[in-house]
Length: 378
Image (cartoon, rainbow, N blue to C red; front, side, top):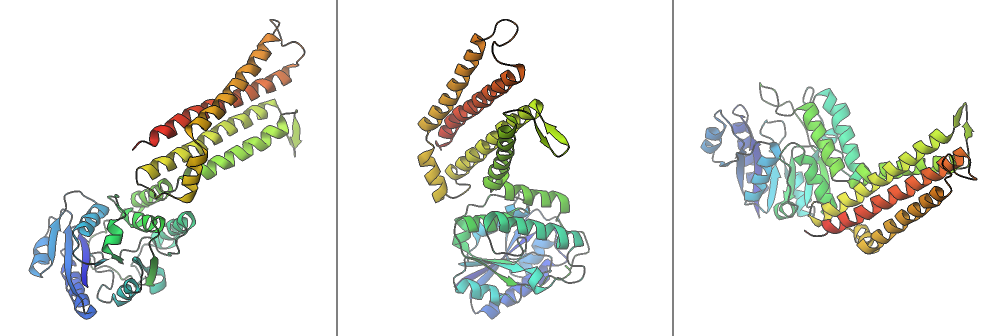
């Protein structure tokens, strides 16, 4: 068994030497052969020279970003097991036996949990500790059903080939989330072990940007889950719209001190149209993500694609559109120049609203069906 300890580095001359020496001792105590791999991401200090002098293998990556460095390191790792760790001396890389045991026991990815292992005083900003990390980790567990308490821990061990197969693409700090999410979606075995986070050994500020990097993590979690980004909000809007549409379709109703009248009826139609459009966005996004390898194929996606074919979508959209056109034509035939004969103003407006709704849904379904068919071609 060969072990690689992978360390991304950008101007870490104060600490990279200590981390390399600890990593070398970790390899020696593991009983395996191994290497310390430094992925330099554009250092202008003595980080590269120090790394080489201590016997580490160094590769240089010009594309700036935490994810860019780690992707390059994973691609060139010589170990069957790779352990990644930051170069700031905040993690106890010397004691990684628990990570290795989990991998040897069958796990594909093992992540440290700083909240279980302990966070040193001043080692993590309070905003990260009590707001950012807990919320983003909770969203990750909610969206992807991963039993991991710390999505962003910087020390991890994994089977190298298993992680390579995920085709990770993120260039920034969101790489940490991408690794967990894609590992879960592809059915890899993920476990966690408690790990201690200490105050890092640098005199300068960390590379992590609280707001911009937090936003990138959130965007990735949403983009990787069309269900939560599009489908559920669309269903909620459609449900509210349909509920209001049904109750106001026969006339005004009183709700507490408010009256829902014809104006409300039109608003509810708008909610239905927006909701259905958002649902269709979710369907199209999922088809795109599946066909282009961003997200894996699932039984639900396969089953839906068999039911919702181009021909059925076009037929449904066409029926709705033709029905609305026929209804509009019937209203037009009753027009006497000033009003619609036999129909009062409010009823005529409600019928017109239904025409707008059915034609809108028909057009959305029709064109979405063609777009979905286009996305099937890689």
